[in-house]
Image (cartoon, rainbow, N blue to C red; front, side, top):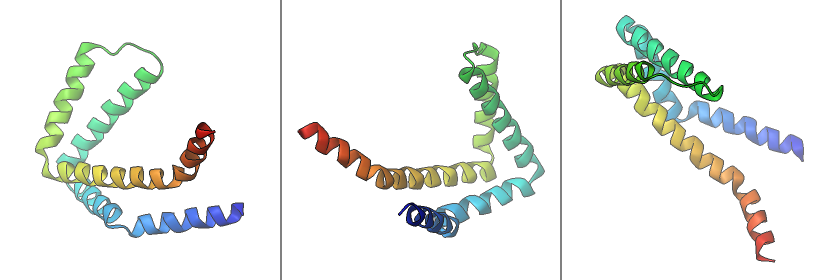
Length: 118
């Protein structure tokens, strides 16, 4: 039975790779990487985000200037059409993954709902 679940997961991976959402991300990510300005701006934004997440996960205080730098970087990338399109594609992919997660978790949610009614 377990192998069947993994087979289904692998089939889902293949379906995701063929999805419109993934292919849009791939296309826009290529456009970002093909444009040196977009690429540098996107890499800087991602690095700032990762640094802030790491600090937050380690319980370190985030300084006001770091927040301002992150906000400035976010404002800058919103002006770049390549990055803006990529971020929109990422949001669509994220929504698809959230929807799939709901489907995957449905048996567990139903189990707990059944048990809570007894």
